Amino acid sequence: MAMILISGILHAQEDSIKIQRINVHGIVNGKQTSGYYTKNQKTLTMDEQLIREINFNDSTKQIQDYTFYFYRDGRLFSEENYNQRDSLQWIITHTYNTQGQEVESGTLTWTGGKPVQSLKTVFKYDAVGNIILKKEFFTVKKSIATTQYFYSSDRLDKEQYKHKKSPDPVTSRSVTYQYFPDGKLKQREILEKNRNKSTSAQTESYVYDAKGNLEKTEIRDSGGQIILIKNYVYYPEGGLYRYYEQNKEGNMLCYHTYAYRKHKVDLGTQKSYFDKP
Image 1 (tube, one colour):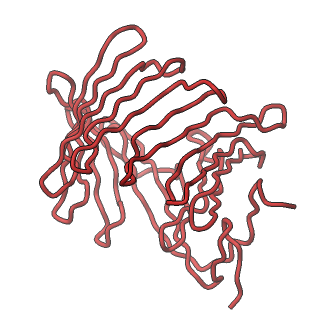
Image 2 (cartoon, rainbow, N blue to C red):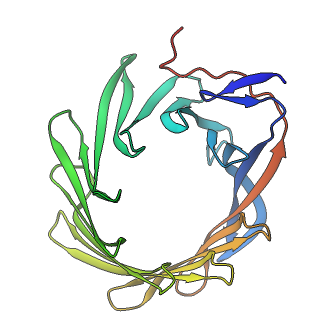
């Protein structure tokens, strides 16, 4: 059996891959049209491991950029992004502890043909493996954003986000969680404070279908008025088929369909930036 190297992992050449396309439909007078273009295409192994992704330009419909995903010891090691001219734009690396938990991610961007670390994120966990702290750094030494996570009976109960210096206009965000008896997420309440000292609040409520799939998310403002509805429809075998958003009047804001195909192809060997020549 011939073998090929895909994203740092050996795969049998006869094995199938799965292609997922996200198609964006046009909206006219609050309704979706049959016309569409492909916005995103993902290549996955049959066990749902993402190995390649392509984004297409909204105007030209041509490739805008693409990303390769490389794995080591079964864990995502790096995400490496190229523009339409095949020039490396950025890399995100992932580092894990002996328990397999991600403890650090770092972003490298190319300036003057050289890689420069533009962002670093570190993660901390409690004794049972729940993430309890995330810190983001724009420079090596200065933390610019911190998120703390709080739990009750091993369920995420609250998260608190604060940042010191960031282009993000939100200076702090508090999110509280509520659950159904079966453990599925029921509601999120989000309170944000902005740089101009104003505050905003909204509530996200979740509705599930008979199979337990997320069917709808309703987003309401502080007065309880619906401002956005997110809808999800699935294929009989379980894959996402449609995603669309509506305003409070029911008019369509966006409409996406998802198409899946299986192939038996030789993807060849894609080398990571970190692979030795």
